[in-house]
Length: 163
Image (cartoon, rainbow, N blue to C red):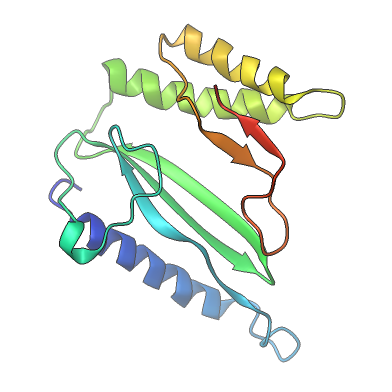
């Protein structure tokens, strides 16, 4: 929502994740299973591409029509699951450049996911991302990597470069 404090939102989502994790895998056999936050909640706002989880003294409020990507993650027994969702603050309907960027990101992710098959290369995935972005007349962000996830590791050496 417009006017929400970024630091407060990040902290509230982390607390919610911890509370929800306590509700699952709590039988006698699984009660001692290691679980928790795998990635602190971050809000990427407008031109900030990722990993913005400010300290209280460095925070600011979300403004009307800000494009906000909420990223969070949890783990069970060291196996991480990260998720993200993008919204435009206060907008009932999204149009124009905001809509193009959001839809390009969604469809590029879908295309990349379909390209990750035996026999394809990282270049095939990068080209699929570029093709989707060209259709929406947007540019993929240079230097963004997708990492293979392993137990206790969310950024393994195997990567796919975005551009």
